[in-house]
Amino acid sequence: MPRTKVVPLPVLGRHAVNAYLLLGRRPVIVDAGMPGSARRIHERVTALGVDPADVALIVITHGHLDHFGSAAELHRLTGAPVAGHIADLEPYRTGRVRPPYLPTGPMGRLMARNRNLHVQVEPLEPDILVRGETSLDDFGLDARIMPTPGHTAGSVSVLTDTGDLVAGDLVANSFMGLIRGKPANPPFHDDPLGNLASLREMLALDPTRLHVGHGTPLDPDRVRRWAAREGRRLARLAARGRLTTRADVDDVAPDRGDVTAG
Image (cartoon, rainbow, N blue to C red; front, side, top):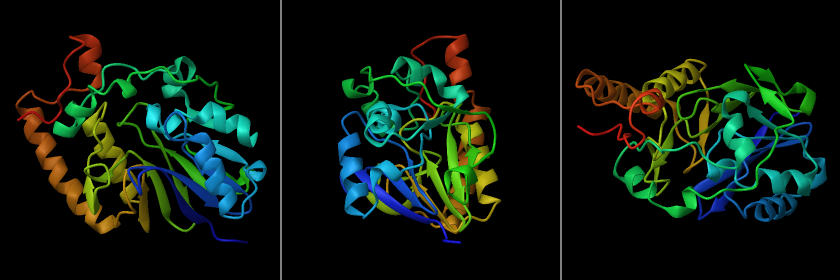
């Protein structure tokens, strides 16, 4: 039985935004990049010697435009079904991210003003609605979809038999991948404490590498040390009443959302 291999498919810069090709008995794609990325992903898959028509499944890790923006087109190009978590069904069906973005720091505050993050993309209706841990054995891959809510309510990761965790935006490289190997928050989180809890749950499974949406693979031990520091930082913010989540925004004002003010 072939061991699952994880191959990055950069869709912006060298590592700024990544999709992934998972190679097992059949190939599976994780994430579809921003609008206009589908043909680039299709070409990269072909260049790796894989027939895109053989792709068994497209897994979308969450409902942000840089991860599902080209999912509908990639579905047409490959014919592969699309899987996404039911909790992010609204952005998939509308083609819009649920506003507002909740920045995790200065970069997020800057990026939240970018009009490209607020456009409407081609919507899609996932063929497979993920509700819990889901085996990918039927799609030719020794791996599981793991719900990892927090970045968004419907965020998921994919854990392979080899211990590779394709983690979406559960964690990132610093400055959107510019500082390689240094764990950091991505620009936004809907629920920072919930995301940290999901990250810790995945680390407890002893992954060998974390393959992220922004940057190069991360070492689990380095991520553990960062997660401990991040937990202390978030606890301080929460104690000051300065930790904003999606639930807070829904209940109060639509323009709140800096989870790192302090």
